[in-house]
Length: 290
Image (cartoon, rainbow, N blue to C red; front, side):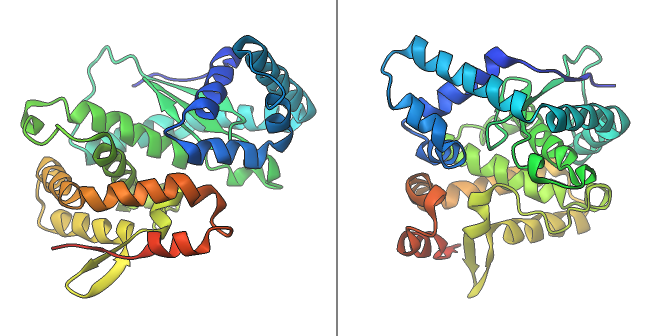
């Protein structure tokens, strides 16, 4: 059994906020944070000192958590219950799908509930955003297990790419790896057993994928559907997952230049899609598979 640990970590939560607010290469997530927390943006605009800014973030997080403490506590309790009940079942199914075997001494994974409006990861830890869950009247609709499957698929992919079989193809640009992990997460979560458990047969994954399209032989479909069909064709032929992954990497590399441009557009305008409708139309233009 792979250890799955749920814990709060205020210091790390502060650092995650600070990182995305100050990452000039990732404007999308910075804008997303300030779209949710306009008052935090106003507070930070008044200071230039890092120590003071982090203190403002700390006080903001603590104050926000106190304001919604009752519901956040219920969410965090439900997170622990779901992880204990089915967490390892999901992890093991992902490992099986990805032809991956855990070592007996595997360190496991840490789940940290956070209020930041997306669920990033670092090392063996992923940060589960509870912000949208606060709006739920029925907490049974909590999407923790879907996010768990999504993030664990990233961790397993990184481990897979260290295997000798992938030596020639594992050298990728940052952007190629980004799209690989995000699309692969969708493909795996839509797979039969996981889709039945999680009710995710139409799962769309990361928001930026929902507006990306592929054109192949005159047929246009979403990038997620395109690679999902690609995966199902391999599954029907009972081909090894490793072979599929190699060919998926090659396909991602073949459209790498276009994906770079798509990511640039998304980073600049994705958090304000209604405001920048023309740029989003450009973003949605199909990527041609040659």
